[in-house]
Image (cartoon, rainbow, N blue to C red):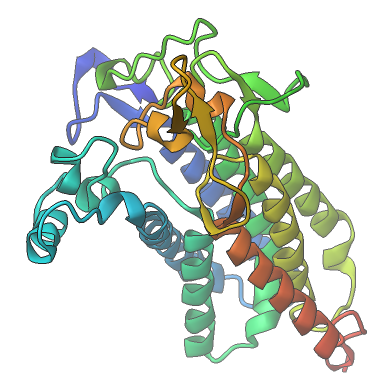
Length: 345
């Protein structure tokens, strides 16, 4: 797993010694969507040129939204009142590293916002979805007919993006696995557990490794599930004459169920706690919060993976629940599975 592909002759661009492999995978996802979407629009008798601006808006929305939601997700490690309220405000909003300069494990808002890692899919999805919606509304076209045409591209684009997480070692894998299942579990990074986080060696090591712990390969799980949805779209669903919005509703439901399920294996903090937070008993018999083994959001220690467990509903699970509810209600109320008689006239 490699975080970056080094630039030739040891040059650096914007302080980086190489091109992010995650960025490369996102570019491949965009190019794939650019190839598929216009053809699907043309096949449906719609305007293929709509895909050009639509995909560009989706990419911009995905980047902005994924970073905004990431900041919201880690806000508890950004806004830590160690000073007066006003001094904390100044430290968080007017300092690059924020409270990280004062408190171990804290994170800076601006440094996190512009860090190449730290992307939350649902934030990107919501912003991209909203951007395309208002763009189609601005054009005055039939929004959900076009939306259905974009869904195969979205499914395969998400699958490729998740492979980007896997290849770059962005740290979106799961906690320690109790079984060794080929492909679905893996030791992320060097098996000796020595993870070199030196940025100049990013092309030799993943951004974050599992410190020799066998963990759940959640990026691959989500990628395989989304690829399966893409195949179903291409082989069957897109050829059915459903009412407009059916393929969009199916994506909301399928992706929501997949993400809600996989999230039980991931390393995200609970927004709605159900169980006690993970605690590790040290060699001196002193309980220590497992979250303390996370080093400021970069490279955690092995104990972080070994003793983590799901303890409540995460931000992604809450979002997934609403996507499932919206998709299901829309499908039932609109009876989207029925034939689109308007398209036959």
